[in-house]
Image 1: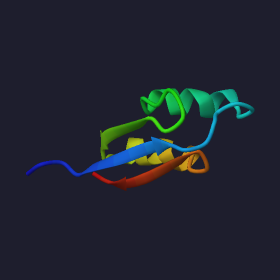
Image 2 (image 1 turned 30 degrees about the vertical axis):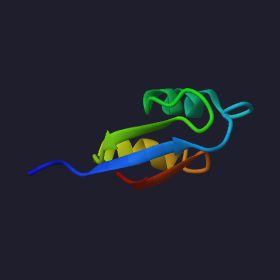
Image 3 (image 1 turned 45 degrees about the horizontal axis):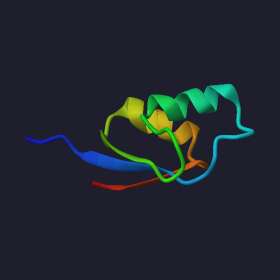
Length: 61
């Protein structure tokens, strides 16, 4: 069975945010505004998204 995937998009700038939040955004593979990545929906990825939920949007892929 194929693993569920989610699309994560960076919608706010990381300027002025905590360094750990910037590192989390980079860890998700997002570099600049409006960049998107399709990621496998795992608890680890969900935790990273929860940490920076004010910077990103999530949708089904």
